[in-house]
Amino acid sequence: NAGVTQTPKFQVLKTGQSMTLQCAQDMNHNSMYWYRQDPGMGLRLIYYSASEGTTDKGEVPNGYNVSRLNKREFSLRLESAAPSQTSVYFCASSDNRDTEAFFGQGTRLTVV
Amino acid sequence: GIQVEQSPPDLILQEGANSTLRCNFSDSVNNLQWFHQNPWGQLINLFYIPSGTKQNGRLSATTVATERYSLLYISSSQTTDSGVYFCAVPPGGGADGLTFGKGTHLIIQP
Image (cartoon, rainbow over all chains, first blue to last red; front, side):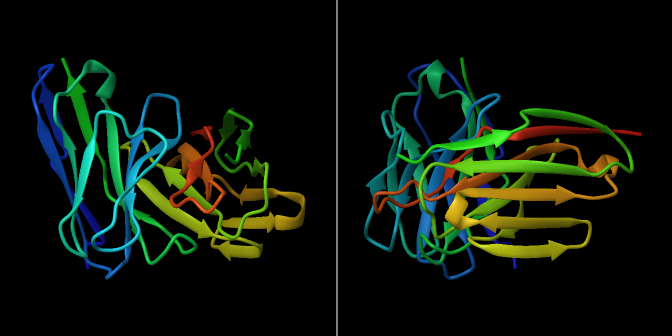
């Protein structure tokens, strides 16, 4: 039982390049989330999906797009990466917004 | 949105000491989680505790929802307890996800 799995673990991009971060969960959870963590700060919500087929903006959505591919998978896309998007990205899942959330191991992204 | 404040921001202790970390939040909540982020960056679930008291080994947590705070107790600290401790609550207003505090950075010295 792997929980929440993110790929890749590390990535370096040049400004303007695009990439997709992948996330999959095997807990049959309905809700999935993408967060970013900047140095010395807590996590901030980028986008979430409360159920298959729905997505909504969180606190810091600008510069990102998401896709809920199916119940298991939720991807985060950077269309044109900027240095301000250098961060650690975490995916999470929960049964619903009032239940315990579980996090992946994170993706460390550097945009140069 | 909801405000989450954690104290102290930094804490340095000797191995074997006890500590209390505090989380204050600005509105009523029906979900509160404590996490430990280890030095490798992993987020580890400690407690899901919207109210009441829970214990897990040397760690325990208490949430007093009516007074809008939660406490995390660590007893007999070990060097492996080092890292950042976060509390997180729903953002309020019917929104989804979690709002995190800025964390308490704990260093346990041997």
